[in-house]
Length: 173
Image (cartoon, rainbow, N blue to C red; front, side, top):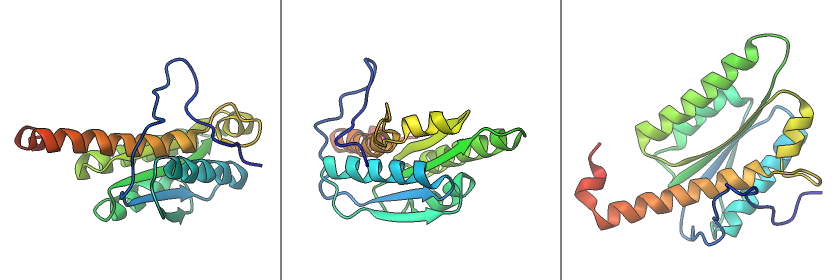
């Protein structure tokens, strides 16, 4: 069972409860590794977008977190915002470090290069229990899919407000 209306938690979490994402075109790019965790993250992201008034988000599935950046790069020009979801769980080899670094740097590069807000919902965990606790599932303490989706909408909204009020200054890089 998926958590109902789980939002950002903790005393330092921003209050994103009044987002207005109506009319936004958003795509969610989600990896397929760790099916149970990914189902929770994806459900949370879709719930977060619905809570923000985003209708009919597009969902694109890729094999793993390493593939998230190339999918985001292909979609960035076609959508107002993206949400990248994945999970990497530490094993006994350096593979974890390489995948986490590649996904993080790649997604960041796409966001900065294209100026497309990308909600970062890639879990980097030491074990399955940590991932499940952040996946937005029944009994989870956090809902990182929901948080990532709302962060994408909030960032788009913030950037739109700046460019609308000061177009020449906002577009200077």
